[in-house]
Length: 375
Ligand SMILES: NC(=O)c1ccc[n+]([C@@H]2O[C@H](COP(=O)([O-])OP(=O)(O)OC[C@H]3O[C@@H](n4cnc5c(N)ncnc54)[C@H](OP(=O)(O)O)[C@@H]3O)[C@@H](O)[C@H]2O)c1
Image (cartoon, rainbow, N blue to C red; front, top):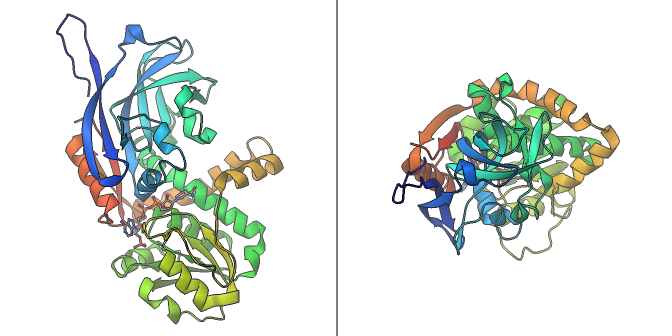
């Protein structure tokens, strides 16, 4: 929303921003920040209206890791607060870049806000980059915007799926590729924690369709068992309190979306040397102990997506990842009409509700939230 103040005859444009306290994520509030008007935008800058964005547990993880992984530096907020990055769509409403017209639709990383000023650089037919100095300490993917106006794959409900799942499915795609490339480290079964999460079921879908000889086992909370079973891409679904009922002589690879130290210790203790791979991906449970003891079996290690991207970019050549990812997405996207119900929320009250529900694990896994701070 743009608030117009006409105190001195000069129109003051404002952005409505949703911010959270960095040291207590339960505390959140809405503030207004001033924006340059169209005439005072610097050269090459774009004023973008943030049209809609997705919000999932992944965004909460950005907040949890905000300091360590520099997510807080992307969209500055007042001292002690942070603006959580979200994936979504923006519409250019003023442009000082000769190559970007007003009305252009961009897909990428946005603040939880109504507006963003982008310093457009490397403008090409398919995209551009925000060259703002404060954004340069993160991986390039976080500063890239795709120009998607007129692309049906990014319009309407398909667009909602892109915002909700595309960045997550990239991780699913890379983990599937990494495990397959390494012959699953000798495992014949893959265990996925937070099996109900979008990142996990994207990976389960790929394993189920591409790796027929691999058993896909989902670990989840009792309340999410029915949802996980309904997806049809897990061969077996086990609740967290029953993981030791799995045969201990099963050679397993563990892909951990939950980040739960106690669960990890239980699984490693149970499978021992049969734990062939233990990859850390997420933190949905926010129950990670800072000093985990050494565990039996494969040593737990963070899966670092940019490493696999760099490796494959080199091996597959220009466009090689895009083509393969595009093919994988084409097989995945049609499942989403059955698997997800998109719920739209508008305005600060809806955004706050969805934020707190997601933070506190109250969002049913079938629900995909698409939000806008504009009423
Ligand atoms: N490293 C990377 O590059 C990378 C990339 C993509 C995603 N990830 C991570 O993967 C994780 C999944 O993200 P997502 O967006 O796919 O999640 P999502 O779809 O929003 O996942 C929701 C599920 O997570 C669990 N959960 C969420 N909040 C919880 C809470 N407060 N307490 C307990 N359980 C909670 C529940 O699953 P269960 O009941 O099944 O446990 C819930 O059904 C995130 O931590 C994300 O950051 C990492």
